[in-house]
Length: 217
Image (tube, rainbow, N blue to C red; front, side):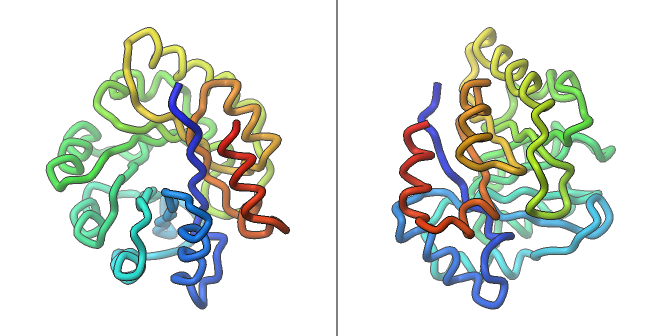
């Protein structure tokens, strides 16, 4: 199993000074920053555009884990790649050529990921797991931070972890939504290795201790 990675979500950071929130992550010695991109259509919220990612890239060496929650993610792969994304994840739910979009992400020099919403069965991505660097399982309905973790997602994590082992694949298995030390430990036992933490990270009394505890999961 991969070593545990904590990817704090900038969505829960200080929107008046996102660079300072990214700097907090970097100063703790963490490697990843999760960037939630929402279009107000696929999910009921609006967040950041490529310009925000480009601005953050100027001051940060973090690995930008960019999650496109968009109706037409294939249209925005190139702008986010050019803005400085390192990994771009796209949802399975909208209707578009998923394989072609994943291929395009790679052609642009980024790693690629596929994402499932809570009510989307694991089988929806079964044919794509050999094409990706990361599978992201949403453990809340995407759109807003601070929602409670859905424990009924644990069997889905276990299922996809089994596929990875059975096929000898090496993609990372990421979870996002209501992730804290307790739910993160449950996800780790189910097979996850990459953890998006927004509210729990930025509101932690001791972020350094929080990060250290995640590293030991």
